Image (cartoon, rainbow over all chains, first blue to last red; front, top):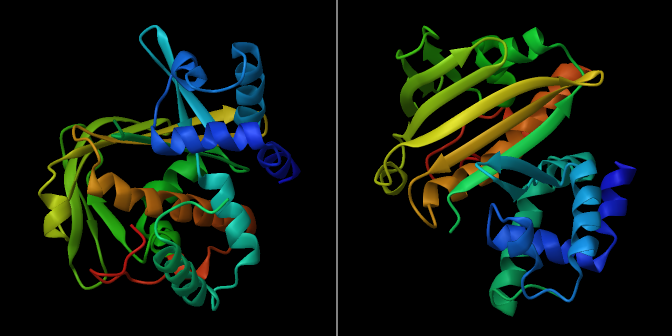
Length: 106
Length: 156
């Protein structure tokens, strides 16, 4: 689980995950678009995200497409969120979303 | 465009045990919302997910099967009209040994942009897969994945 937290503990890597969350299945070039990162930096971050199983890549023809894999994040949630808290937490996050609009929290 | 999701998890088990856990009712009932699948598990045969009361939530067909390695399903929701309206999706389940674990990859895709069905399964798969991992590694699945879903409140 350390490897997942380490992978998440970086703004640039979270930015890449956000991008894959918005658009599933991007190539390296598409991931690099509009980012203030070099291609080499994106490649390095992607490797860390793939090692943590937060990103899965699949070949499609000549392209390698990247997908956000939410399963490790689910495993973190399962570890600490008690079964009785689940519905209350859902209510709270729904309330927060409603009050703040759909905008992501910073 | 957002019409394909990929989920991957590494489970400390054997490929055969994982395969059995994916298709046998005594396993799926413990981590897949108390449901089981009905099929004779040959290429071209019908396939469906059934709840304890006999409700069919999803149905389709076995497109390809290569035990204990690969299963490709034509998969259509039958339970919620707005999801059924989107037509069939395609799910690929792939097992491969990686080190002392088995990597399980689930790919779910549909020929439709911004699919509500894929949105629904994207809540379901991570919960189901992490519960399956707990079941195989510790003998106990996650409690919330053992409950029978209702139409308006289900994790898949």
